[in-house]
Amino acid sequence: MDFQNFDKKCLELLEARPNRQSKHCFRNAINQLERAEILFPIDNPMAVFRCITAEEEAATGLMYCLKDKEYKNAKKLKPRDHIHKHAVIQFFSILCQFAEDHFKEFGLEMFLTLNEEESKKNIFFEAHMDLGEGQTTFIPNPPLNFKLVHEGKRFSYKKQINTLVDSKEVKEIGDHLKKIANLRNLILYASQKGFPKNIDIEPKFFPAHQKRVLTLLRTYLMIDPYEECQNFVQDSLDSFLAMLKKHKFEDLHDEF
Image (cartoon, rainbow, N blue to C red):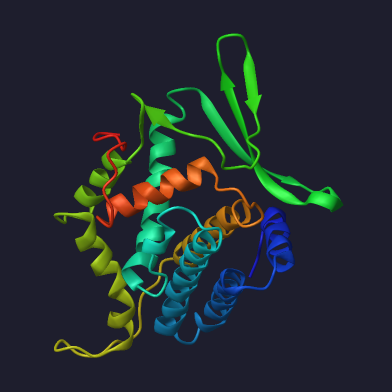
């Protein structure tokens, strides 16, 4: 499996983390992707199954990380629940859509950068924004310790959630999550319509799964090394739980 140099460095950072379940979940996610690549030419359904498992393991690792770091409300996460696992993956796509919708509007650009100093190897964000007097650079430290607010309230990402729901032609996000969580069963088990056979896979299928796993890994590497609870992580966790209707937060914006 081919990795960009940046992702190779991320894998090295992963191996350097203390041995605990969150780390092992991510190691297994990479292992599942590698096995999927081997299986694609000879057993498409099992290759797809391993790609799904890779994403689920990465999502599980991130949930265990938040629990280990004792983020508020992290106890409500269910790392063994397939709907929660796929909800993590979908929530990341929602965050990406939010960034696409708003960052350009405000002239904000964010880049991931690698600090390769031997004593403190880590990855962090560089944020560039024109405040009217030339471009200003912000480097949050820890990397996700910043806040996004609108009209004094934290973002719920409701607009992006509704856009996703509409695109999937379902009534609410929970219906979509149940459907994608059930995909693994459709690959494995027979139904009244027959049994699973070969699956047609588009060329972009494997890179898309690899990209999602590596995105979750990068996020893990910006959370796990830090003892303090970072603002954006906490706010995103609360928005995630609100999306799943596991908790109601009065300070989340009703529209944004």
